[in-house]
Image (cartoon, rainbow, N blue to C red; front, side):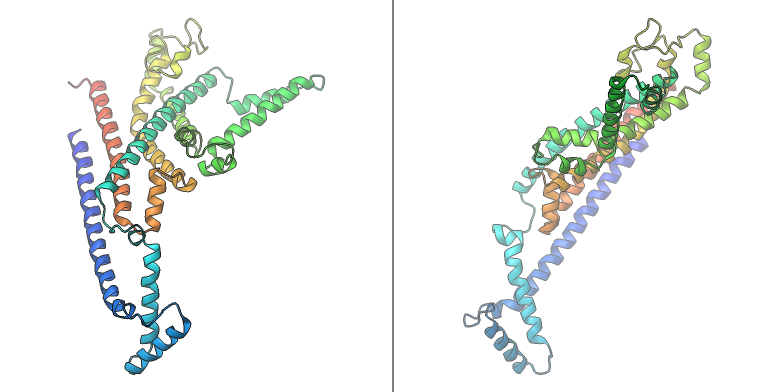
Length: 367
């Protein structure tokens, strides 16, 4: 366990040093480039008699330069291009527009810290909701399969095939259920920005609640988590300890809320809800094997949240600020945001690894 912790801490330190070195190298090179260009064009911009916005003055300037430097072909055009680029930067670069330097300031850090804290809260809520919701969905599908009922799609097809011509109301109900099922599947697997643009103008896209709903119910986050957990439940149910549990007279009644069956609270607390049932041991095994995959799920959620905020232009959020600073070439802020995302992924992985290590020692009876 100590080796895992040390590995995470070393990766954080190394990536932090790498970000700092690259940022320092870029800022120094950028400053040298800007200084050299300013030194090259400033004497010409200081000439009050030349208006570089006037076509006649531009032609006169180019011909004058070529007359003074006949051996340097194209020098006039090159100087005009440099002057135009410098003047354009005065209008487009953020430090010129706002009057602040292109250096990460304390105000920038405070603003990023507030957005970063909000991002962490949304991420943790999405992680809890997707993990609990996906686990509950997987357990429900697993128990329904044990009952022989099949999946929702199979049950719908069975009901559709059992329809008779004399029951139009029942046929209407089945069709409506099918449409709702298809709509739910489409939303769960759709990219977040597709769902958001479909609802644009009807809902407040800048709402944190709406952002959280998009993170949980789209991009396949919920259903993919449920699918992975369901596979682990199915695999654990075929292990040898299940036969041992059955031999010890543990219940194998898969009915919901029956006396010896599965209580509904098992959807939220599978490891504690049915201690006298064989499902208790299946759920413990699946939970133990699945815990390490939470790291990939957390990284997937973080990436999805960043993309949602960038795609929807949700102002005041970290993803939007990342996109804006990329456009303004504020790479110091970009580096700070990216390092913050990396730090969040690594800290989450560290916490999961620590908890997994404790579970491993507990199962191995190591004190």
